[in-house]
Image (tube, rainbow, N blue to C red; front, side):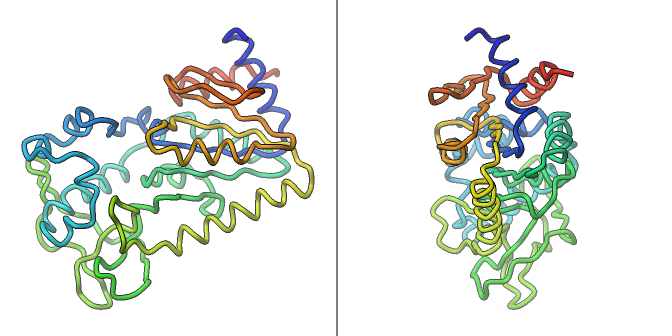
Length: 280
């Protein structure tokens, strides 16, 4: 099928579906100007001091740093928290939200991103699952309890030449130990998952409700790579059986199972092209 035909078919499926699932990986945020951490080159370009240390993203995104070097750990996560707060979500977020709001069966978002961009763009908090947690929520680094709290009152003071945070660093209000983001890191045995599990339960109930009613579903997947394939697997599971179509938008990895649609663009361009192809 030629690209124009794929765009038109995707547009028809998106228009006619009774419900919309949006699944998103790291590529969704790149078009908003967020850094791409794929490969050491992208990570080190965004965080030059880590290149000098020879520390990869996988090594840096480890809770061990909160014990070994709290200033560096909060420099890294504090910079990201501040960056995500001031980043304006690209136009594709609004376009998908407007489509989702009109669906009889509603919409849901499943994302591996911790940046909170969907909430910033106006998506309903109760219609989002963040499978890796959220940088906008904190927990105790010990942890002393299962408490999770919002980071709204925390604004880390980060020296962006060294990517180190200055004192005072965020603390657990219960025990006074160092706080950390409620984000699932690598080698992370202390992540508190109950907020994400509640989101997952809501997502499962929504899908089950669509299945019971026999509702048609369009799943639009954006910027989800193969290295950590959680988002891709979730998309494919959601459209398995029933009246469902996967529209995979990805500049490189846009291959899809038979009967579904791959669109070879980045997130903002792919959404725009599909929306422009929708019949008036």
